[in-house]
Amino acid sequence: MGFLAQFRSFDVPSRMLMINQFGINMGFYMLMPYLAGYLAGPLGLAAWAVGLVLGVRNFSQQGMFILGGTLADRLGYKPLIVAGCLLRTGGFGLLAVANSLPAMLIASAATGFAGALFNPAVRAYLAADAGERRVEAFALFNIFYQAGILLGPLVGLALVVFDFRITALAAALVFAGLTLAQLLALPQHSAEPAAEKTSIIDNWRVVVANHSFLAFAAAMIGSYVLSFQIYLALPLQAANLVPHAESLLVAVLFVVSGLVAVAGQLRITRWFAARWGSGRSLVVGMTILAVSFMPLTIVPDGTRFGTVAGITALVVATVFLAVGSVAVFPFEMDTVVALADGRLVATHYGFYNTIVGVGILLGNVATGSLLAAARGAGVSELVWAGLVLVGALSALALWSLDRAKRLQPARTVTAP
Image (tube, rainbow, N blue to C red):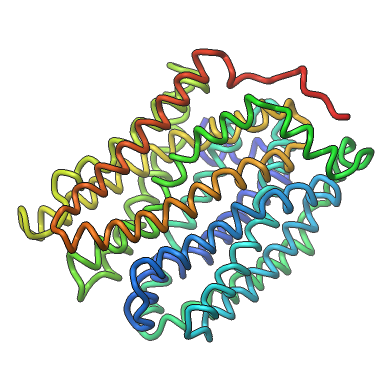
């Protein structure tokens, strides 16, 4: 089945959510690829501070998913999607005028919390609407997701040439348009019955009692730590290689990543599903993510083998990182719903991203600090090797869970 036919085979809410995600990512990636360079360049923040700002943004999103997911199950999915788009409009607007570390932390936190409101709701809504076609729906969803990543940096590059603040304002306008579109056009979805009949604490107890789900979330921390380096370590590496053309190289990295996803998502998902199924596909995808940092371990900078070799290693790492992320995503999203046994799905997504959010915050601060220290000592390869190790440990953890059949629904978990 071709892309358009597959897209049309889904109901109106699923199609709207896919298109909405394209707009969300286009606006987001107009700005985020260039944020690290703006913080380290014009604002003059240290590497650890850059890592802190990006980590706070991500943690305020991932860490607050628990609240956003719970509210989505109790209030319905549409109100949280609209509220999240509105808050991100304000967050990006604040980034345009913030000029100090405290102000940047506030703006980043607001921007991140916006994602905590709409992301669980979007994924739970899509899972509910797609039914048994969840893996297929999330694979198609990821094409729109990655298409936004592909277009966003190109639009941002054209604007950041003038001023980063113009880019931030343009991104805010995109989210203002999305807010209005979702408010007027997205169908409402009723709240989760289990959430309506019980307290928030009881809902959270259901999730905490699901030990297989918690183990899966912990195992997936490495996947997020590695994937997030497209915003932190890879842009910083680009700045180190070509300090006068870093924005162009960063744009190339995001374009390459987006092209791999858009062109390969459906093929990769079908290929993995046919050969390995959900559990083993997660293990193989996680292994690819780990391997993606091997080129940078071999060519850690532009001095050892030259700038061209350094750029080549960076691009190759980006390609592998994109393939691994594409391979993991549909099966990851499906596994969360499966382990939730189809109940309190948004709340489970919230807990899931809260757990990985803690790991991302620690991983970003550690990566930013260690990268600066390792460069000063002339041993940058140790940081990239450390990322390979993180991925290998996550792949081993997923393999153990799959072997023990703990990536399957735990039907003994019931609502109080």
